Image (cartoon, rainbow over all chains, first blue to last red; front, side, top):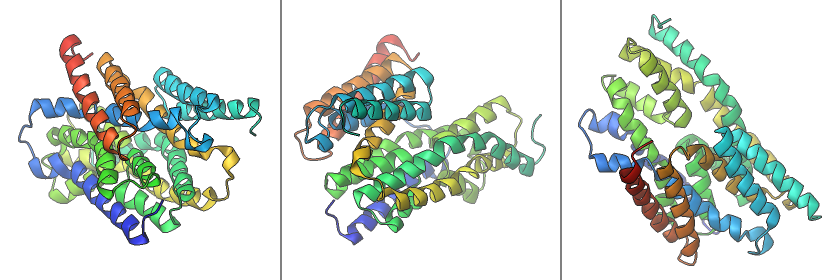
Amino acid sequence: MNYTEATIWWIILALGVGTYLIRFSFLGLIGDRPMPQIILRLLRYTPVAVLPAMVAPLVVWPDATGGQLDPARLAAALMALVVGYWKRNVLWAIGAGAVTLYIGLYLTGRI
Amino acid sequence: MPPATAKSAYLAGIRDGWPFIFVAGPFAMLFGVVAAEAGLTLAQAMGFSIVVIAGAAQFAALQLMLDDAAIALVLLAALAVNLRMAMYSAALVPFLGAAPLWQRAVVAYVNFDQTYMTAVARYEAQPEMSVAERAAFFVGVSTPLVPLWFGMTAVGAVVGTAIPPEYALDFALPITFLAMVGPMLRTLAHVVAAVTSMIVGLALVGLPSGTGLLIAAACAMVAGVLVEDRVGPA
């Protein structure tokens, strides 16, 4: 990370203001006026649209292994996703992913 | 039994909110750890948790900052993760739109996934609640969670740098994101959106940091709506 101290604080502030405005938006400003249906429908998919694109390259080409596909990390990623889908519970999924990662690292002699 | 006053509605909110400490606590600590690993100071990690107070977006911003992405892209990607909260904000209008502005302003600050879902479930189950009771309930749900979010971020940030690289903390972030995506895959449309996002994200990985992500997210949202048109929202 090569940002200056000031830049990091600007990012934090801008992100805070932006996030607050998103939360305040309809409740605070727009009130009861209806909004276009298509916008509401697109918004439904934002989390599942953003997160996988962000994670996929980190799983396939991890920095920690110099960009080499790592079976331990791949297995951990799949396990987190599958357990999250199955249990509908974020903490269970994180736990399953972490345990899988450490088993994988142990089996490949890295811890 | 319906809450008789705003005070009992507030207490009911605390009762409904406290189980989420088992999600918010470890998640905040993980953010602190990852932030410290990334080189943020304790004050900066706390700044994120207090000013932004949105887990997934904080992680998203951090990830792009690790890539030294342009500031505009850091902000765009993290705010895109938070756009779902615009939906929450809109969905709260029928319940809280008539509350005083200052109350709506407070609710907006603590409007995140767990508070929103818990509150709307209660509002729908008890339509006789007054607007004041609803606002008190919402703040009640957030009351055990917000101080914990701040405190555990600090704990994570302090212990984070003491953890050696063999423990593969680089992978805490992908695991956390995937763990969040799993429970969101409720319908075929959500699954198609997630798969589209992943494929386009991988295909465009050569573009400048964050650019491929935005294109992938836009494609995925459109894909979700198109599938919904075909099969209907399940």
